[in-house]
Length: 500
Image 1 (cartoon, rainbow, N blue to C red):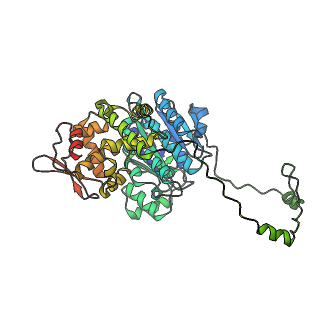
Image 2 (cartoon, rainbow, N blue to C red):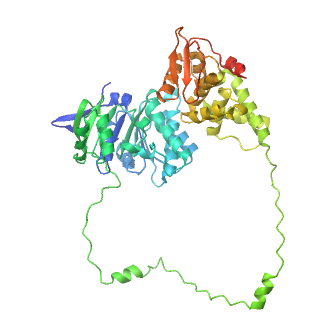
Image 3 (cartoon, one colour):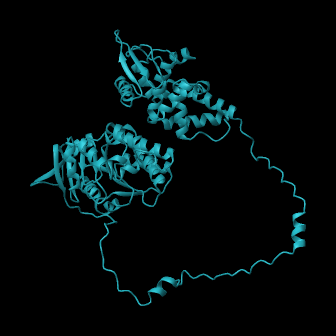
């Protein structure tokens, strides 16, 4: 079903946006502060609200006003990450439009909350993969191009969630609409996945040049972006126009809680202005406690105090709990992971199900210490699936491979490490069925797309020899796999045993 969304005017004609095409191709909106980005997003949300489920990532709390008019549920982000993940899963299950209100949180908390919520929507069960329009305002906060003042962990979580939304969200029904003040501040791998563009007013040369490149315009034409008025954008993309098209965004039914500052006349200066400023109010008044100055100490008492022997040190307190043997703990965790991987059906279970099984097995084996968090379990599971032992991790090549794998989403790290293991151990390239099983899928086509994704990221190079065998080379590791049959049987266990 084709649904045309009225975005405003394109000259004398209406500016129509094909909603079904937008769900398949995603949208990027760019414009300096005050150019009308939020107004554009509000127009899009209002016009498409009757047709598609919506999720708004709102860092300033401007879009909560959609709740009263269009029935969006406002989710306060001041919750634990686990709560946000569960709420996001129920949002997809019951197909409810929501606004994730991040107002009041600092930047790092906003990044963690948005990453948890987007991750919960991304990890929803396949039966709930209905179309959802995911609108992210101020996207440069959640997918920054360079590291800022936030921790590396928070940046990695947020950037990974945004990458999943824009790169892999389409198959799960998630259509990303991201808005940013500056293209230069937005991660390129996130911006590059959008096929539709609405470019507003901007002044910096680097942003104008990138906007012109995305729209296929001449660099000399980039100057036009300085002259765009508020609410005026240049549109391009399969859902909008096949050629750059100037459009004017139409009116909206709701309004933001915050508005642009307007000049208002100053009040008449009161005669007692000095008293108003320097006299504390009733709620500010506190009794002032004046302490008497300390009495001087006689010289004899001071010398006596200095000549006193130094007190004996306090005995060191013994720990209340027994000291954990880290070697015993690592051995227990490795044994539990090995038991899980020996089950052939484990490859097709979600990480959440495997994590619960891992916790139960750790309690049965009485593994000491705090249990691994879910993020740590996913990392250890990916390493174990690749057949990497603790001694191999200390090798310089494997340290580099593990570092490269951290740039990938969690569910792809195991596949990358498995192929890298084959390359460093001089083994044939794993078959499509082996790669699919490591990814938790039965689709050989999906396995081939994984290798193509690694090549697009610059991590690997694929080639086919004269006998139709596949070889995967890793330039950063300085090694490559032996020729392997893509249509061969599953050989994950055989390769692991051969490597050991």
